[in-house]
Image (cartoon, rainbow, N blue to C red):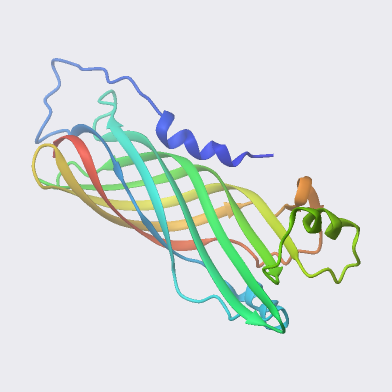
Length: 243
């Protein structure tokens, strides 16, 4: 099973730049290296999840999902205008409500980490317009809570031998997946060492195996409960830029 710690790929990528003296760079070939903060705005489809929420007692999920992210890249120079790097992101949305004597909450989370491969159009001056892809892995989680806020040490343990109608209840449902995402990004240098990014793409997720506590298989999950999504990416990068 894909471990969510795979997200750390964004901090572990590293590549060696080979400098070829006879090749001109600058106006002919972009070059540089950078790391930065890259938040994502995802637009997931909550429809399958929302079908279950009226009976549970919380409001529907709606709107986009803001996620924090980070990443970086380096132009490898062996192939002009090609850059390779890594990125990672994680976002959470929740709905809470007091209903029928209980506090209820559903938390929806998505995250991932990926290798990035991009080609920067050489004919565009002063900015970097890049087409590419993200290839990696991630996870989608749904956490469900119902409680009456009255917890004690002995009470927590006794709940496991109580009837199914025990006051407190929680479940964590997890789906691990592979990521394949086409992207387009525009990096605008404010100077030689700071650049602003705006971009986007579509997140394709491959895999529909869900598990619950102790990685027990969760069956009969709708294939529509996926985290495929359009996304917008922004960011601030620090490094060296020659666009």
